[in-house]
Length: 85
Ligand SMILES: [Zn+2]
Image 1: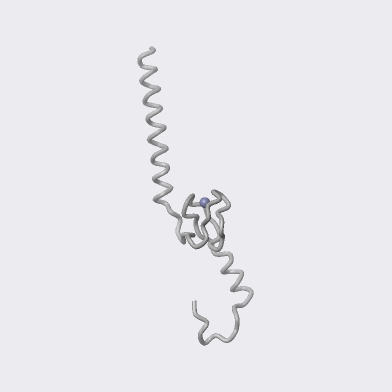
Image 2: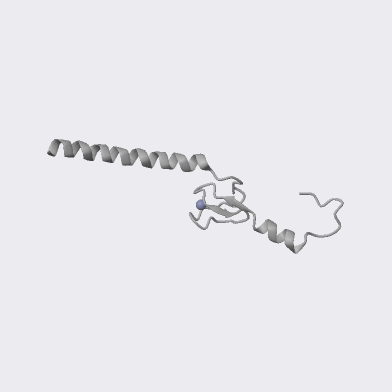
């Protein structure tokens, strides 16, 4: 971002475009404005930490753990049912 050799300020369209830039919360991965100070979803302080790309790996990691937990519960349930009947 350099203002050298530009003697006009940014136009209102440019300002609107920049303020609409979206990023992703580094903590919960939800889409947020990249100039937001606090994530509207998880209330984390994200000023200066907004990611430009969605942290898919974090999301997948969380989902993966959830799937393992569900499968473990299902396995325990099926084992109980096996012994009951
Ligand atoms: Zn968040």
